Image (cartoon, rainbow, N blue to C red; front, side, top):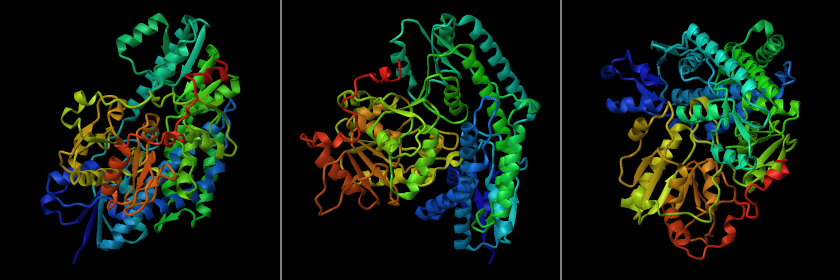
Length: 628
């Protein structure tokens, strides 16, 4: 009997397939493919049965082995003396790309072992073999699953049938035009910046994302005349933005030029030599670069040569642009909420030019003894805490503990309390329930907020996959349906792989929850009684407002806040600020215990919040510590 397995990434993979006559076992990867099959009443399997706790471990083990082997090979210096920026960006992108391959190879292998198909079907491999790198190394247009399935089938001598799909490609002329326009805009704004902005107090930030607005207003309030400069477009209406530009209360370059000329590049030859060195290492260490029976060297080589190589040259061009901005007028101080690529270079350039700077991480940083959690958070810290900015803001005691445990911390840590995390206002407010949740105002309100990592930025172990994220919410819904007087606010952030309409179709229908994507997260957090999450900065934000947190992982592999209270029947359970449920069977009992013993307790111990909140920090007193 012929057995077929069809790996489907996007719904476009089914464009030329007659669904009615399709008899293959369908494995749907992306949510859009799952919803498409669901609408057409076709049974499918997602990734959950084939990528669980052991999958997370296997991917991190192999990823660590490979990256450690290559880590020291990209050491290059440009004409500004910038070095770490390139190494960090190169391996961050490479690691995300590698994680995509490892996760999908692991999953494919488990499917093949279980169903033993005589034929494997997938979309066609990426015909261009070129990569238009996105923020995290995989662009929306990159269709990689066909490459992975093809490599696996070749290595295992499996019959592979290709279903051709129409790939959306961006024409080279369009890319060049966009790059040229960006160059022109930057040169015009730099010329005006040199001649219109006087040498009064200047502050620079890459943009105003991640709640930077309050920080900007607080710092500017200390100076009678100051201008805040954004490298990229800030989040203002066009009318408001141009008004501020004319008044010179704000300046922006809108974009940075990424146009480059190989002949003028100071890193081109060195970078090319280092890439050849990496290629040689991969070819002479086949055991290290093999996973699930597949040689990873060809796919990594292709990605490095056709993607990362060009991305590093674009990055060099952006660094040149930033250097010119810093030389035009020396800023008094620089603040950033991120540090990857050109935002990492901003801190490194400041260290070269003796300009004071501070990185204010928009992430959550918690020390862990578990090897897998530690590995991933250490990688994460290279982008958000251990960089070349002169200072790093410590917004919570957890961040302080994290830096205390670090070796070779590059920045000077400064205890600031919450800056871009919302700060405590002495308790939570429930007055908004009348407006936002009138039908549920008297219920126990759970807010669910988590941070799933999609295909372009897979972080195993410490973050959920998209399928795990949806499944975990469904487990919560099923549990709450059986309880009295609970209501779930599902806080949702849409992405191109998971839109609101797709998300709705994948959740279990029920009246016990609602999906909320509009409005400020803080407004919903303050009217909630309990936050449920797997891993997210929202956990530490909840603590700032003394809202307890339940961390839920049905695979029992990861607990973001160490030593959280596990609620057990017939045991002496303690009141805590953070709780943990490692399986679905205990979830209902845990929720009811928290409501009865924590939420309804009018005499909560005040010290349960001490490990999460700096209690003696005066509002913005840290400014004096950094010379402002």
